[in-house]
Amino acid sequence: MTAPSEFTRARRVLRVRPFRRLFLVLGLSSLGDWVGLLSTSAFAAGQVSGPAAKGVAFGGVIAVRMLPALVLGPLGGIVADRFDRRHTMAVCDTLRFALFASIPTAGLLITAPAAVVAWAALATFGIEAIAMVWSPAKEAAVPNLVPRDQLEVANQLSLATAFGVTPVLGALFIGGLNALVTSPVLGLTATDLALYFNALTFLANALVVWFGIAELGGHNGKGEAEHRSVLRVLVDGWTYVGRTPLVRGLTSGILVAFAGAGAVIGTALFYARSLGGGDATFDLLFGALFAGFGLGVVTGPIVVHDLSRRRWFGLSIALAGSSVALLAAAPNLAVAVPVCVLAGAGAGMALLTGTTLLGSEVADDLRGRVFAFVQTGCRVALLLTISASSVLVGVGATARPVLLATGAAMVVGGLLTLRRIDDRPGVPLLRDLRTAVRRRPGKAQEPDDHAGDESRRDQAGSGAGLP
Figure 1 (tube, rainbow, N blue to C red):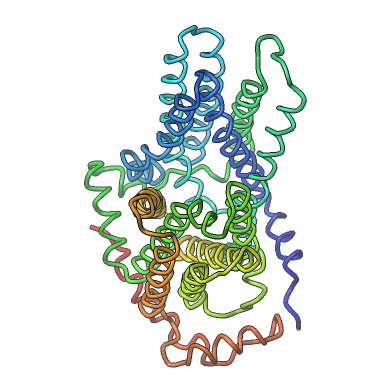
Figure 2 (cartoon, rainbow, N blue to C red; figure 1 turned 30 degrees about the horizontal axis):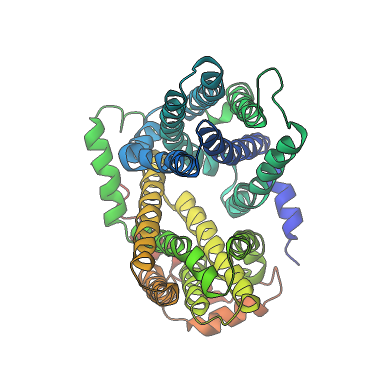
């Protein structure tokens, strides 16, 4: 008996009506995020004149998007675990609709460019702060909408849409608007229209969530998080991550992967110059990284079949790291592009596997806080490593040694993660991987493949009961 194809598995999970509707919401939200990122920054830059001022306005809005993760990220998980997730998501999207719509409206009503840029930055901060609540609620809700054996496919669809389809659609949409709207229409530029469209995507999301996905409802954590202080609930969530071996290993592995990605982004422009290229080379390498990410998310499960997902997670990080190290030795662009694709594929597989394992292993009343912790840590790691690597290459270090050191650290981190969470310690890793890759889809595993899995899972989750 053969296993269903990836298309059949995707179609099967999309037959689950609540998830299908949430998938529509995720697609619109992701499209809105990418359009918002590009158009808000362009809007701010368009309010001022001069290259320096435009650069400060553009970069300032980007930087503001990172700040809420540092300040409010962990609190979003408390909201996701403490209140009805359907209400939370609908209110968040309604607020994002209002804030995005206010940005071009401010440009129409306020004459001082500095004040318009300041409001765009403040609204962006509010939008990102709200996203810190919306995202953990969404991640925590998905495992409740689909059967456990379909969770990986559901995450595949979500990640492929968020990082593969909607960035392209967002860029094409803005490019098309810029081509069509060459002069203001009723006082609105192409950027203004993009922001209003973006606002409407979030209003549509709020309506779908409120009226179309009743299954998201429910009072999460009732009787547990509800009767304790916010600080106590927050500390309990962090304590759970720290004392649960599987969750600690998954979290640290994801942070390693994002830290590595930050170092690659921070050195990318300097690396492109080392290949004899400029902005076009940088764009090509960045595109290859995203293409590889989508490729890893979509094709990874096909390649490894039923290999232990814990093992696959550690190996994916090591694959991404070894690819980053190989970039340091790439002699030309023809070699660097496929290596970038491979690095992106490793990162995509790691994020897919880590998200799926966290969603399936963490209890519902803790899931929001765990995902908030992970998302906050990822943003912080990304910001710090982008900054650190940019400073290193800026003060004299070359990009290639930084990439080599980053790749080596990622490989070590991936292998250490694998050692911590491995659920098949008695089975040689290479033999297991070779068998999984060669195995025909649907072929049963050997009897020892999951021997002891349940006891190990119980041991890994022994910290689930919180005081």
